[in-house]
Structure formats: structure tokens, C-alpha cells
Length: 257
Image (cartoon, rainbow, N blue to C red; front, side, top):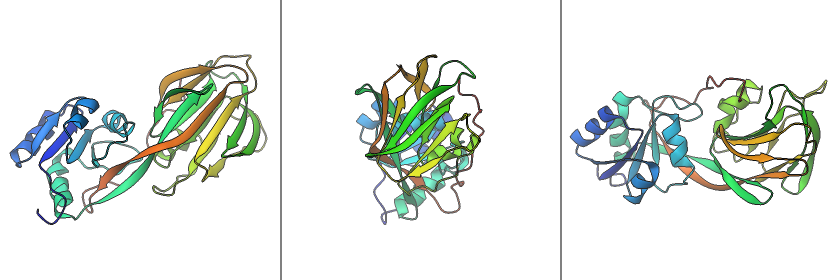
């Protein structure tokens, strides 16, 4: 185990007693708790049990690599039974890491939150059409009428964006997928952009518009408001040959409301 990075302290977010016991029995010191508590302990690696734990950690752009445990669509993950094997591979230098972007969300130039998977700007009432003007970097992508717009990271293209028909984007490509929700048009628009930022301006305020980051309501927007979405940081997840399941498309419900 001296061939790879030293592993002494292993963080654990997700509250799985069985995983913590396995880590402790294998000679590592587990630190359990909320993301902030775990990261303050300066762990050598962090276990995230479940998607919620993984996203909560990722939004903090942590330095130590994250080993996803259980079902985490869009990310390579291991089963609870494979945690010790995966940590041993990481310590021995037999594991690799993947880098994932973190998105910062602002509305009216005020920071609203962060996202690891996607940002959704949509009409707050089901089935109500709004209108949006889209931009990427310093260029215009055009205008559209739709229920909303999803901006997804590569990992996010395995979730809600996939159910909307967005193409799957490989991790590490450094691009964002922009996908309308129920666009009112004969030919649908969609974009894959390498720009570091995307803007969604609300151009019709007949219905309330809400902004969600990783399916969490973070802000509301009105006519002429601009929602800015920009890469702000990154985090790494652990990939263990023979132990990590490939990221697959999740079973995200089509309806976000």
C-alpha cells in the first residue's frame, strides 16, 4: 500500500454503518458526518454513500478524491461490498480519478447556489410556456419558447437531460449540454458548448419562473432577469478497474416539479 498516496483518514458522508465498520476493520480511521465536518478533518479520501452525499460533497469542490458508493447516475461507483477493495486499489496506485466540473448559479448577479449535475430554469406551473434568450460565453445561442431550459454537465447528461433527449457527454470533455424542455417548435434546438458559461434570460413573465440546481429550488426569476451559469471549480471521483460500475443513465423522472 506504500506505492500510492498514503491513506490514513477516510471521510464518510452518507451514514452507512456497515461501510464505516469495514473501513475501520481494515485499519483506516473513518471520520463520519456532514460534508463540512468531514472535510474539516482533512481526510485522504472521502466515501460518498448515495447520490445525495456525492452531490453535497462535490458542490464544495473538495481536494481529496471521492469514492462514490451505491447508485450514483453519471458517476462511476462501487458497491458497499467493494469499498475496501477500492480503497486498497487507490492506496496502491491502481485506481484512477475523473474530474467533474461544478457550476455556479447566479440570478440578477446574485449568487444562488451550485450544481454538479444540472441547472434548470423553468416555468413554475406545469405545462406553461415561457420564453428565453440563451447565450454561451460572449455569443448568442438564440431565443426559444419552451417550458424551460436545462444546462447539464457531462455527468448531468445521464439524468434529467437524458430523459429530454440530450446526448450523453463523456466525462472530462469540458463541455456543457443545453437542452430545452418541451420546446414550442417544429424542429427542436439543442446545443453542446465548450464555453465556460451559459446565460438564460427570461423574456416572458406571464408565469413565474424558478431556478433549480441539482433539483433543489435555489431562486426565482422574472421578466428580463438573467440566470448565469458558469464553471466555478471541480472535484475528482475514484475509478477502480474491475470494481467501479460505469456511469449509466439514471431513472430521473421527466417532470421536475
